[in-house]
Length: 227
Length: 220
Image 1: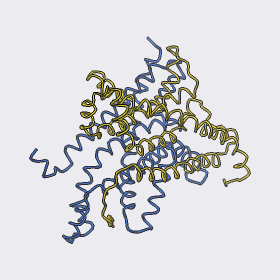
Image 2 (image 1 turned 180 degrees about the vertical axis):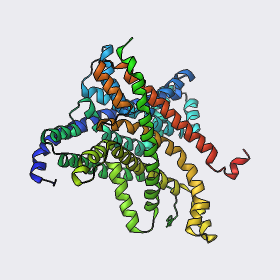
Image 3 (image 1 turned 90 degrees about the vertical axis):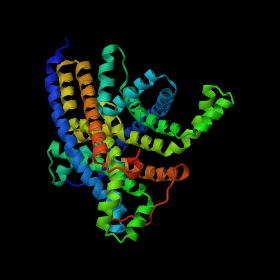
Image 4 (image 1 turned 90 degrees about the horizontal axis):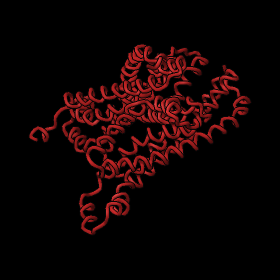
């Protein structure tokens, strides 16, 4: 079987329609993961020991189970208890919650690296708890972890094809539908792969920029080769 | 009592395939990770560039897309893989690409004095690696590796989509057959979590027992 350009161009509009949903799902899930992750990290830090160990269990549980099964769970089990969600909502919810378990760990690392003296200074200045978080801790904790957070946003983008399993018609599902109708897998699947590469390679370059801009560099030996 | 309870043994039997895929995938991923990670540290452009391309390719596209490509497109190019082979191959290559960054990162994280000391002592490159660098770098790698292995475990659920009868596939079949959702899906969620805890503890045990103790830590 050889690559056929006319077929590739014919299916392109359908795939682009899927791209829109892919990007929409990524943006919504990122917003959820970034806010929920921060909420979890703050909760684990400031709540009592019982709540914070419950939160830790939840984070580990979400991190230790496959996203695919979580998607099935949200999509198939929640309707049984009377919660009906559209496929896209269910997908965004599962994806966002799944990745909030990762982002919360990133936020936690960022918060822990904030100098103790700043907490004490905030206390000395008689700032309230929320003022301390709002004006001292978060502005100090977040910039160094921006590259790590951006990395997870890119990760979420790459996981969106899984939403096709709960009937969200995003890029991968469009490709599967086209493949099954025409019985040609080569062009649709390759184009999906090419699309993801086309987004993630610039994303990698962007991440390197973020790391140089916000991250902490270290001295390295010029010759690390073992060969 | 929901109807699906009688199918639970059937679902749990799928855990064997899940573990098999995880173990084989991890072995392949480790081999790939060290090969690619070291190639990326090489001075030879012909090793460094292909390794970089490989890494960006497998990290840049989703595992799901790679799996479908391996299963549906490779046969068109004359390479037919069984679902199991395709699953292990894609799990291994995909996770290997991520883990190669761990290998590279751990090597780069070693203090540069270590390299300078090796050069000053005139150690051969093999000896540098064997006696000085790898024992220290491995210690840094084990913890991130344990997360990668759990990622592989979670990745195995995706092979259910190319009709490999793992735990997720069986739970889906039971859902289709009985219309019952809560029992099969809650069961496999907990089994996956228990397996993840198992792999995490195994790696923590390895970390404690295999990693060399640094002299400064012996006293404390």
